[in-house]
Image (cartoon, rainbow, N blue to C red; front, top):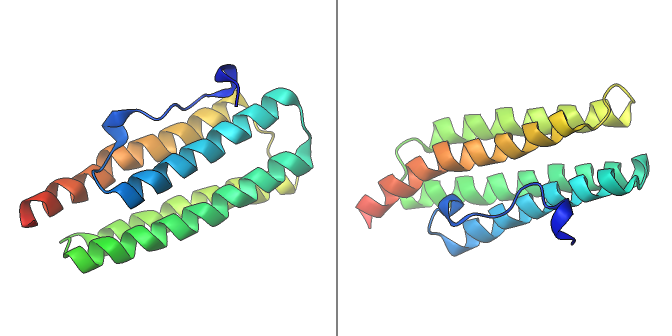
Length: 137
């Protein structure tokens, strides 16, 4: 991937200190960067649509893994975290459906939304469980 296509670089501050979850976050970031690169290359609606579908699918897989993990570890706000995941998933599914139906063009603003959607979640909610679970270890 060319450096110019990276709209969302992985930064160490995103780490929650759990290798599997950090790897999944990196995978989500890579999908957002792939989407940005496809948009920049003008690769067409089908390619962009496939990447959006992959983003939705991977988001669901990641959230499920993370929810199970924090529940098993005894995170006190695991149910609230799951509700936040449901809302975030619905936002990405809605974005994908609007793009597929032609109601939404992917723009820089949409890319910035996706970037802040994930970065804000990691830095806020995910860092909360990481901090609490470190005290339980």
